[in-house]
Length: 278
Image 1 (cartoon, rainbow, N blue to C red):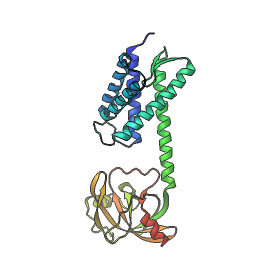
Image 2: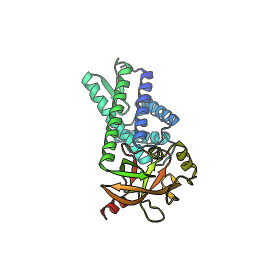
Image 3: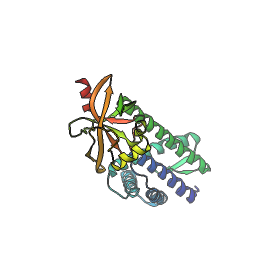
Image 4: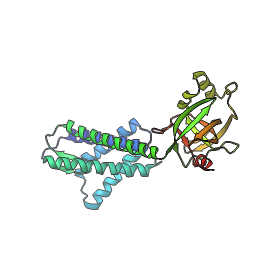
């Protein structure tokens, strides 16, 4: 049996890098280029030396789980959220390995290490990479479809009128959004990019730096928002919110930074829906 060492290293490095990137993307954790490179190098190195380690059965499985755990740490150099990272990376590894083994078996190719896809074949490396990329593309599309479907099912249509301008948008119903202004009005969170429907560039810049005088906004205030990323200040002001033809006493809060809502344009809470029922 002839094994090309370079192929084993390159194959496992690229496959590990793909699965690690897919794991981080699924969990919406930051992608670290050097973290992925170092973690994939560690995994590829283990794939090369694993045949020399004389352990079998449950010990071999535990050893590979340990390697996966170490890789899950190296990719971010952090124990924060390492358990879901480790579990998802292990799941993707088994899923991809099982699918690739099935393809190899169908093609009559001998596989000697299921966990790290060691194989004996003259099959070009490009075929392995195409399989890996296809697997990743399918997973990304499935995750995107499911997330968009969930967001759409948990959303409502509402109208927002600011300074006499009405815009109908779709709001994602987030039970965690319990934000209220000082008067107890529920807050509809709008990503800053959505302000283009009501404000020109100069007005948006004024809102960014907190200079709201002269804009004609009512009940302007700043509240403190607590989130997993820390505390930050949110500018809020009154707006006319219309849901199912009913006007709801509410206000708008501006969210700066990256806010991913899929096909939705705002975040609303249950308090706003309860106000409609009343």
